[in-house]
Image (tube, rainbow, N blue to C red):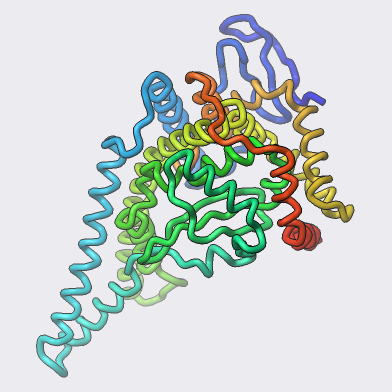
Length: 419
């Protein structure tokens, strides 16, 4: 059943405008009003006039990046301005933390039992708080189940085939979670590679869409995403930690305390602003890396499957609703897949409209991913690629049999989350 309504004529080209639910209408032909700032859009900074301008900037940057990539080959570690700026800022930040630690140790040992030692101790403690965080498996694995080859050989076989097809390393850890999502991460000093598959997502995909999902996620290990580097990954959160430490807690009544609070609040806002700039810059390169991961998904599963994978996220809310409905009814993964397929079929006629609308709703300076509509459009605009890895229905069934117990655990979690 279509959820897109037809409105009045476009004032620019006279074609009929369309809308989805409460969205501001736009023209599907000339895209008039597609860049409209929605009144009910979730705040990002909190001031509407600032959010409106940030949205306009994000929309323009997102569209410009798509136009640049559409006619050019995708390079993994291209020295873009965003990449260079992110790396330079990250190096400066980590160097500052290192200098803080060295200075603190020097003052701590300069002359014992003097006030200078106290200053040195404070500097060391600050450096420890601001130390690089490279991630821990325990945080990623919270609420997820770790899989192994002994209990899921078919799944691990497909992972290895996809990794080989795109030239990516095999993950060290594979997790299955209850989220309708999937991600990869590189954590720790040893740079341990982690792949996490969300059961509500994995279970409803057809065989080639599963290959595309693996191709995309494993592609993050080799697509040159600047935020995943050792230096940049640690630095991205450092300024935010500084701002948090400096932000005053509560209200002070004394004059001196009020002055100190004012200075601390000003410094906190300064560091928070620089942190936001670093995040915004790094997100530009991160979105380029997402496009490259999509290219690897197309290489592994074929262009058509990669496009279908992007399109099913356009209906994320509808699919999540029917999966949870089936879970509450006591039905397992097979019923999830059937219900999701029916939802996608019913909304298939609206795919072009949903692709366009995603460019409005998903445009943000804080977004690490480009809009799904543009991601599907970039794959469709390139030469079609055949599948390097073909997954049969029998292989899909074997994987689901291996994960049956995990699916049941996830079903119970989905039911519990609704109470």
